[in-house]
Amino acid sequence: MVSKRFVRSVDHILLLAAGMVVLFSLVAIGSATLEFTDESFSRLKNLFFAVKLLHLDYTYVTRQLAWIFAGILVMAAIMYIPYEDLCKHARGLYILNLIVLIAVIFLGREALGAQRWISIGPLSFQPSEFSKLIMIITFASFLSAREGRLNRLRDLLPCFVYVGIPTLLILKQPDLGTSLVFVAIMFGMLFLAGARPGLLLALIGAGLALTVGLFVLHMYLHNADVNLEKQLLDLERQKKAAVSETARQELQRKYQQVERDYREAHRRHESFHRHTLKEYQVTRLTVFLDPQSDLLGAGYHVWQSLIAIGSGGFLGKGLLGGTQSHLTFLPIRHTDFIFSVVGEEFGFLGAVVLLSLYLVLLYRGLKIASQARDLQGTLLAGGVVCMFAFHIFVNIGMTVGIMPVTGIPLPLFSYGGSNMIMNLAALGILLNVYMRRKKILF
Image 1 (tube, rainbow, N blue to C red):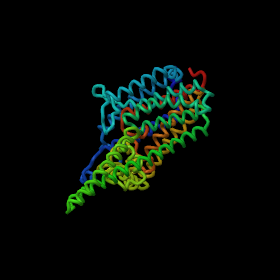
Image 2 (cartoon, rainbow, N blue to C red; image 1 turned 30 degrees about the vertical axis):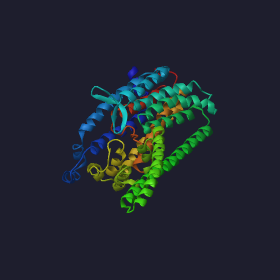
Image 3 (cartoon, rainbow, N blue to C red; image 1 turned 90 degrees about the vertical axis):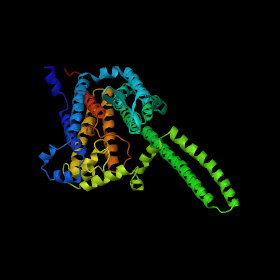
Image 4 (cartoon, rainbow, N blue to C red; image 1 turned 120 degrees about the vertical axis):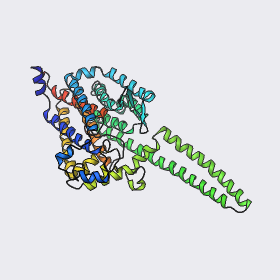
């Protein structure tokens, strides 16, 4: 009896939209992970759609299915536990979150230039992914205890410290993308908790101004470093070409002066990156403005993504028909750039279908937040919606060249176990709040 009422009480539209996104993702992942030669590509691209499905890369699809089933179990468990009980353990969850994030710094496995994974036997997981959901739960409890007391800047300072500690630990890995997700979740939940919109906008504006200032400072330090290095190389060539001893001595004095200036400029440049963002992170955040400035380096990903999406046209090239994807021009196409595969193979129409499903998911999430029976439920649902919305906007934005490449995956779509399980658990939070929108359910 309870199980029937449990099933009837869920948001079926939300589940249907999420399920369709997941099914679409399995087809896209199975296609994206295939690599063809020219001969095999020509042979497969003209097959019927149903036959093409048999040629997908089921190694990756099977792994993703295993993570989906694990995520469904986690989602069901979260749905069954009243969200009030989850928030009662906010302090313990917050401390556990910090312990695991600290453990990543000392015990984490490094891959792709970042130390973000913890290995347990043959399994690896990314704690920063689950940290997002833990932050939503714990921050909802933190804010609900301060209801009506978020009107002044000093009232918000404890909130910034609360979110800032795990954010800095994640930035240390380094994981800039997840750190930005934390900021988006924080401001979204502060707004829902009753903080003054004008104050939040002023803080966001100040943050953007500080970011621009840091970029300007970086460009000044970077250009000074590069220009002095060029001067040193030029003086070195002049010394070798000098005929008279007097000329060589004069050039040597200039060389020594420029060398001292260069060492100081390089020290300042290195100090800047040591205390702020790494050089590659700054490059990623700026190259999207002009990817052609470094087509074989930092701009390669964005440029190939633009080619892939643009070549898809209205209806796309068809499943397994993407040249950028299957001839390996498009990098990390099953994770960060999975939307580029959708654009190339399913075209504008396929992209609109996917975006429409996401729009339904976000709309239902906002409706759940508005119908929650208390502030805690509103904050939980709103935090999940903010997380999903930021992921969707930034991921798709970076594939079409309007956002920097930050490594943020597409929710319920990109390949990856930690991300998929966390997203399904977040859906469990939304369904949990929806099921308990009335005072008595069972």
